[in-house]
Picture 1 (cartoon, one colour):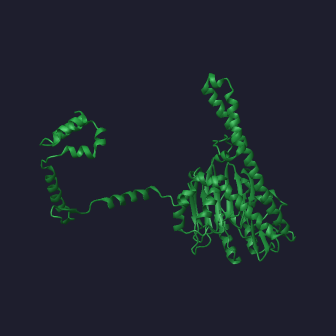
Picture 2 (cartoon, helix red, strand yellow):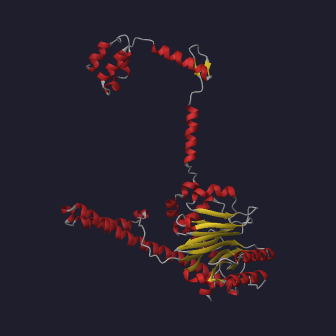
Picture 3 (cartoon, one colour):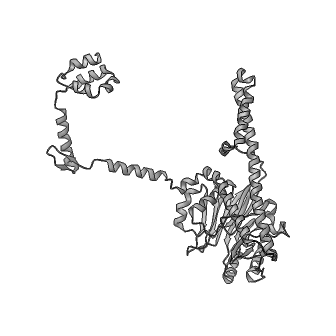
Length: 464
């Protein structure tokens, strides 16, 4: 099963916000992400590619606006291929191959201007007419029914709506969320302007009817990172039963007093077991199993509690939005406070995912291997000798003259000289004691011509 998410991110050039978003992508295991209104350019994408382990396919707008992208998890990147992208930052087409099934994904961002939107839908109709297994996701900027508009905004059967309806009929695709929720009112775009709430459902998935059986679920999630909501779809093209996966201890449990005390109690109880003295290794395995099992149960309970709090916040926001859509006056300040709580909840929830994704390294400018290699090369060049002083005290920088200077120094150094061992004994007495004195003495006698002054002191000091 692959989890597909569509989001109009309303601009994502802020690196901190991008970090939060990528941590959510990893935490919620989104396999394919369709983004709209990225506001990216080629330079920005090159600077952030190292923050995401998968592949990024994109179409950027020419004026720093628009922009669509498809983010593909590392687990699916071998199954994804980019087929086409426009030059206006509004349309990108990729294919996904799974179990002999080829799925065509399209991420689009329809223009706000009515005439431009009509022309854009004409292009989409012509491009997708021969595509099978089609899934189109994105911001259509067009509602499909009166239930998709709230407050004072009204649904209109205008030309863009008729073009979009033609697209759905010609390609045999349909709004799968509305088909499964015929009477529900939910809105994917919300904005407070002049103290009034504007809202509509203009973000959705259009899915080929023959693909509907593969869509296990589809839902909306409110987020504080954009004025649009996540549109999330679980697509299952395989019948392979998957295992439970790898369990890893959430180390924040170590700050939970209840957890710490319970683990101590488990250890105390296990120490009373006969295995503690009879077979310690078996006892150790049993202890680890009990602690692991308790950790799993408590982690599951805490995760469920956090989910309940999250969905409670989301439900309260949706209830207020639905009341506003029906004409009831709502408390805008309360709605803003709920959104603030949701934002704080998302930030806290993202901390673990940020750590696991190592995204914080990217934000804090962690450098790649090439950077450190260049730095080391620079240090070596900086520390290299660039000039020498000859015996006359003159500076020599020419490499040919270096040879004469170095040879002269070597000759001068190699001239037999008298060595006063007593001075060495005084200065490096402790270091010499750590050496093999007999070996050191032998090496000295082999490499000097005259017998050192103070040799008797050497022998008496080190018992050679």
